[in-house]
Image (cartoon, rainbow, N blue to C red; front, side):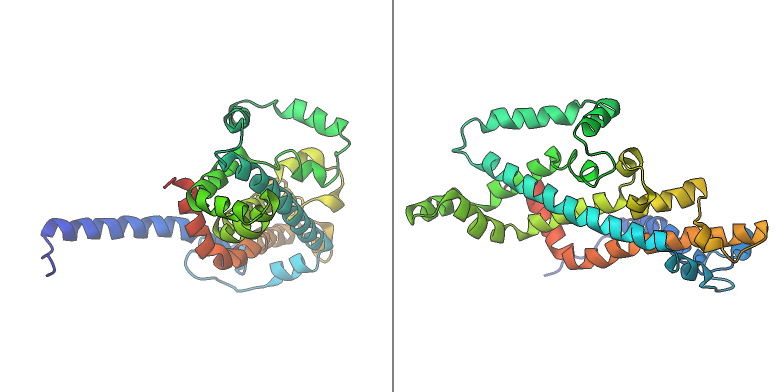
Length: 295
């Protein structure tokens, strides 16, 4: 028998829905505004006419963006850095987390202490730069993917997942049948760890795709810039490629085109992650919950 809802329950639900709706609008509206602004007349944006619907629809900004080679180079570089960096980082995270999750691994607490130490203390930017320089990684992909390849926080999450998902009885049974540690890890642990692997892939892909600071520090050639660094130069320093302005003469027209390009590049840079997330969502939710709570 269903319990009759009281006035307090109804008020609680109304308050929750109202707060959640306001929060959703605060998150979604800026994204929606960037989208409609990218296809609106900049003059209408300046006058405040664009806030709910696009005004003076134009795709001139997108045409200039996709006709410029620096955008495609940035896309290719970001894709390369994200794929290589994610493969290295996820591989190292799994290889570090699995032994630390094993109760029979001698000295695991000592290793875990050393890992934890790096979460609170690091060498700083200048010593790190000097180390990367001495290793000959300046102006290479390795300067972006190697220094932060293994994150301690991610190792802890994956270790917790292994501890709560892979029972010791399974490992003991496999060893009785003659299974080695390597074979057990590759053929049994990894197939059962798809949720947490998807979480780690999403974490690292987002991190590498959105990262620009390391590229700003370690890369010297524009041909190696990731897309986010190209976007940063456009948004922060107004460094729009001359190829995008080749047919624009007046200063006012350049300002108008620059605004279109700014909003358009934000949308273009966000599309890959928006496309990727739906495919990993179910793994992401499951893996994040299991990996963050030890059962």
